[in-house]
Length: 300
Length: 178
Image (cartoon, rainbow over all chains, first blue to last red; front, side):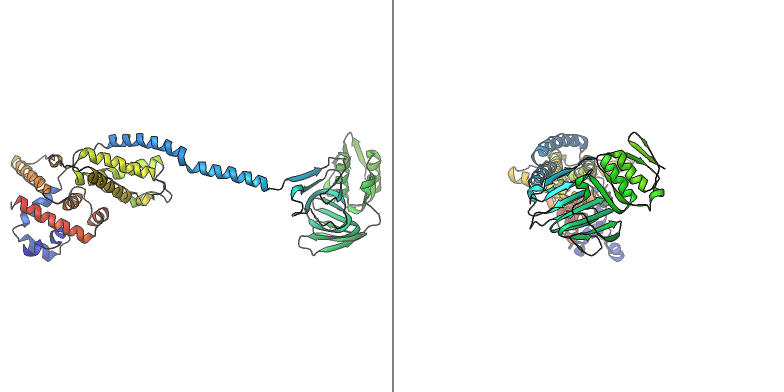
């Protein structure tokens, strides 16, 4: 057995890892029979019964009590919740609070910005800015129409859907309704930045209008926008925009086929304190017949 | 008896899920229990250690990857056992080591002969060193491959072969030639 007693031989034998020659010569040795029997019988050995079910139910009990303790002590969701609450608080403190001015239909509103620029908001419009963060963020966001009378030296921007107007010390008017945009400069200068277009600087008496992506330079003759004095004036403006101005002013419903008036343009004005006169002023000029039924105007 | 745990489900299986934890218990607890039983020869103690090892797994379920669960359990239960041995000496009750196997459909003479041999073998196994015994029994009873035994015990495959070899040499000496 000399060789067989060395190292790993029997370990390899019982694991069927011997070569054929090794295996055959080993079978000749006197120890082979006993070892073979040990290998066989040892596989029939059995350990005492393992009470697995009992262990598992004990485990479940202990596990559940531990889960409770842990969930109070250090469940991650509590940490996350705590951090979220703190962050929310901090965010709220740091977040500039927004000031919003809005006008309803037929309303006008005049107020001053933190740098004492006077703003007049036309009907059905809104203007938002951050009052407590004004120094860092001199931007107002406008939807609708507003006239700005800027204090000398003040610098700020007016953001609309279509373009941003940079104030260079001035008086100017901004209208933004959907894709229709116009700014009129009555004093000083403003810089208009519309997406994709190059910057446009408007000086006194100049206006810039955008209908969709198309921009046009215009001249103005009035000293102030007419709407400040109870009248809305339009010069070669798409009729649709005039109709929405009427709606904003009088709170009426207009029923008409958009197709019919797609290309129609209007030059003229309407007055703010008399609906019937205004309707006549607009529609007779355009040679449009209309029926007035209460608050609804039906165009033919 | 042994199933590869690698064949188990998708990537983000969390040990913390009750369902997963339960399946881990059913897959591995028999093997862990036997392993500890070979070390201590105490049925009750082995069950206590299994329970403790699985509780440890539960406590650390977030840190233990599903694929490393098996050897985590072996390592933890071995440590628990060693701790117990260190603090209060475990007296191994060798007489309760094995239950007699049921032998059926055999001729009476063979049955008697085999039973005698079994008793001799059981006695001889008690003469093995604890290191030899655990390797021998893991292989013979639990059908563990050498590579797996090596991983469980923390030795090389070569060392497993050596321990098996020496175990067989001692067993043969104790039993004598048939």
